[in-house]
Image (cartoon, rainbow, N blue to C red; front, side, top):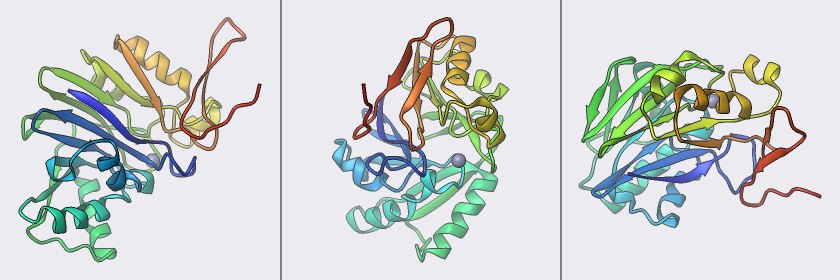
Length: 242
Ligand SMILES: [Zn+2]
C-alpha cells in the first residue's frame, strides 16, 4: 500500500494545499479518503489515473473534505463512462452526499453508487477492509481504519481527542491525524486537535509513523515538552521567518 497525500490542509489555509484528500494506492487501483476541492486535479498531478479509482470514502460534509466530489464524478462520467464512481461513508454522510449532488446538478444515475456502511463494524469493499468510528467534531464525522494488502492505516479526519483514534489505529503502521492548531482549549471546543493530541494518540496506539495534516492559516507547529525547541512541519508555499 502507498499513501499519497493529494491535499492536506483545512478549509481556510494556504490555497495551494486545497483541503483534504488522501489516496490509498494498491497495484490495481486506489481509494480516496475524502475529496477536497483540489482533489480532482491533484489525482493526475500526483501520478494517479482517475479512471483507476476504486471508491471515495467521505468522512464528513465539511467542504474541505467533500467539495471536489461533484467535479470528480463529472470528470469520470466523461473520461471513463463505463466506470461507476462508488462513494462510501456512514449513513448520515451518504444521505448528505446525495443532497449535495442534487443541489449542484450532478446527476446520480448509473455512474454514481452511494454506499452507506455501518459504524463500528468492519465492511469489505473491493478488497479494502473499512471500519468507521464516530468522531468528536462540530458536525457528524468519522474516524477511519482501512486495511488492504496486509497493512492497516488509521485516519482521524477532523476530531477532538477521542477513544475512537485508539480503536481505529490498533495494529496500524500509520496514523494520519489532524493538527488544526496549537491552542488545546480552542481546538477541543471546535472539535479539532493539536499536534500534541496527535502525538499522544500515536504514542498510546503504538503506531510507528504519524502524519500531521489539516493546518489552518499557520503551518503545523509541534511544541516539545521539557524543551524550548519547536518542530515545524512545513507545507508548500508556507513561509517562516528566522
Ligand atoms: Zn471538519
